[in-house]
Image (tube, rainbow over all chains, first blue to last red; front, side, top):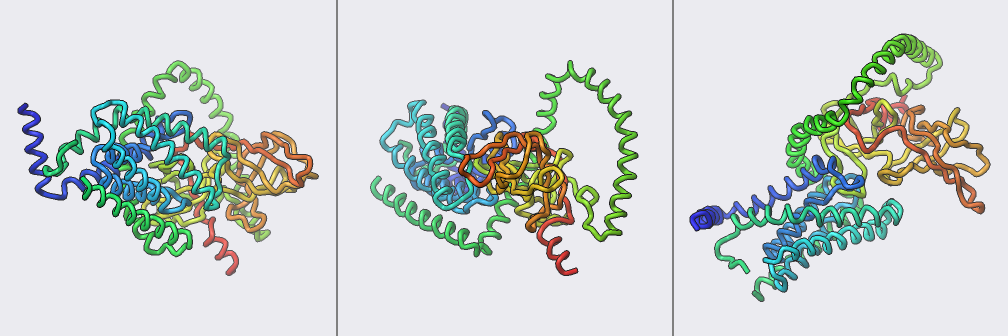
Length: 187
Length: 284
């Protein structure tokens, strides 16, 4: 009781500052992308790295709704685009914006309490993101790997993202709960 | 509830329009304003990347060393013997290199790639996507690195520089579908273009006419043929497969690269290569 009251008070103090929430969301995305491009490239499944930033975007959209989903999807996607050399800038941003909105919308129709819901959401969203990115890149005339390799890599990304979710989701929920403005009633 | 949903939908439309605008700007190549935002975001994230890779590299090495302890003693004996024999060869090679450089100067040929100025760099991060094969290294403009410079390691050609910041640079690996190099087989009679097929796959040697006589195990090196950006002679790999449709005019040749692209750490950037070097050469 006293712990949760303390947390609520800390959250209230932070939300009064106004910058805490955007700052926390920004830090989550920068750290996720840095981890994804350094440590996680050495913990691959058959050479495939998980898309930790994407998992974070889906978790945030799931917890905070469509508005936050759109904003973190766009900014996180654009950040990833900027770090991907020789790729179409804006493509990841477009896909992540769309997915952030969709996940933020469908969460009104699901129960946040069920453990498997965010895991399943990440799995489905990852499949759409990987497939969509490959399809749009090919349509826009990018040099691309073979379809068999695309399917293999995409499938492994979906698997790895899904496996990470049970660890990432509680962590992000913990941070999001602390910086959520008080006036928003948690559903 | 309805008001909130409406706001989300409006934001969705705004950001989708913004994404499409950015894609268009990038596609048209007029990416001046984009470049500065890009540099800014890389400046924000690179300290975090550097920190993470500095902290975790010893841990990774420690874990891999534990598994190898048993083999280490044997390997040590073998290596000591090898060092003795190599030492003699190195002296010989040094003389030969000096002689080669001198003779080339007399013949007014370009300096060979192994005698060129280079800067050693360490990998600090990988590209964040799984469909792009690139690494970020810890040297940049301040160390003389420019775009299109060739990057090598002791095994052979690694790739080329595609983006430079003041203290870091991005290397597009040879195995990327957008990576490529003009190449020659063996003594240079057969030339073609090597292109990447992604991680774990062999490279393809393209534009080789069916009449050409190639064998599996032939050595493929870079070529300056057709204004290639790489200096000639950098090892690429060995031919691993030769095939192709009977009706096709060209062979389908697979090349197994010398460089282990799954385990890159230290590499060298050849400072006298790239577009600026070509322009300088033309000016002379």
